[in-house]
Image (tube, rainbow, N blue to C red; front, side, top):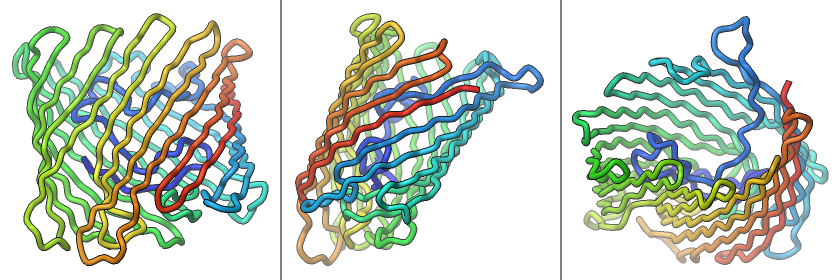
Length: 399
């Protein structure tokens, strides 16, 4: 699986350096590749309009003990964000054969010690879905801008990603279904020494339902990544996929296979390597949820010339639902290893990043106000050794 390579650490989010995605076909199951987060406050439909508009505003403050991710002489920072948002759903009840959803949220950042870094990030997405008796077709668009400190270079930078994709499934028999997908991703950076990349890919496969709960099947996928740092990388992946759905109790989706890849700057033959991932949600009881994810990706390096990054991300999180609140604890391990694809000098060391986060969320004032808070500790070992503490508190209000 390929990623965009956008490695910025958002000042108000988790330290996730290399984007990853769920295994093939997981979007159709509604599984998440990351622990569930607050989706904001939903409003009722505006009766004078067709469809449903939801809108609100939030404010969030983040204390960061090591804003520039330095090994020595760390600099702390207090960031305050203003977060208005709006979304639209053409089919609030979810029964129409055609539906359209769209959302937009600017993030207005202000920094206490570094006001010269103040700015506005953008986040927008749209999805079109067409559902028939045996066919489901969806098209997705998203655009995201980020500003923060890059984990691999230790510099503050701005970046953006553009994702356009399409997915289709067709039920050819009571126990057999086929799927196909296509996606284009572009990442870019602003005034910094970091280099973005372009990637495109397409895949197809099928599932056979052995039982009402268990399905499996093969898939084939082709991806191409282009970057001025690493040249062009072509990859073919052959995988076996499985999914297990036991009502609302357990949802599991995994894939495992082999990937044949070749880089334009590597004079050698095609290389063979593993590819795959796992996403699992388990409801231990009515109030306790357990989420797990394992993802392996290869992305172009944004900082080093003629190097790819082999990235393995493992995450787990437990969420306990209280009467009007929830508390969760999660751990994420991120391992990044550099792979040479051309003439290079000294090879960078392996990066190992470990973070733990404790989150508390509560609804106030007849569920019109959401309060979110978290404590995150991160430690990094590799080319630079550093640690970081983030304290976050925020409010989201509906109108």
